[in-house]
Image 1 (cartoon, helix red, strand yellow):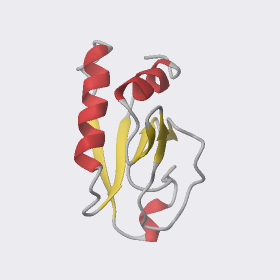
Image 2 (cartoon, helix red, strand yellow; image 1 turned 180 degrees about the vertical axis):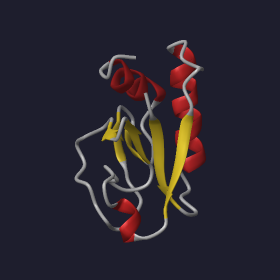
Image 3 (cartoon, rainbow, N blue to C red; image 1 turned 90 degrees about the vertical axis):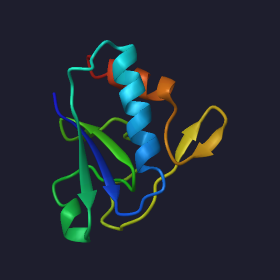
Image 4 (tube, helix red, strand yellow; image 1 turned 45 degrees about the vertical axis):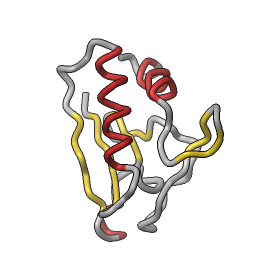
Length: 103
């Protein structure tokens, strides 16, 4: 299983997203999985990815939050959360998304 965090340079939410994913994996007992940070530096870097803005979390190349359309723009992404729009999904949202993918 390949988990990637696709992000643009200087994304203010990359570190937070990484921490949320790590917390979710710990809760699932899957600290054995590595999260690959994949910088998106140009529109060409989005080719063949599910990049939908920074940060995008993928498992085996598929966005775990598929509601957003893939983009070639180097832009930030926002997520609907129980407490409103935010730059990262909650740990619970990530847990649910990962469980839906068989973790």
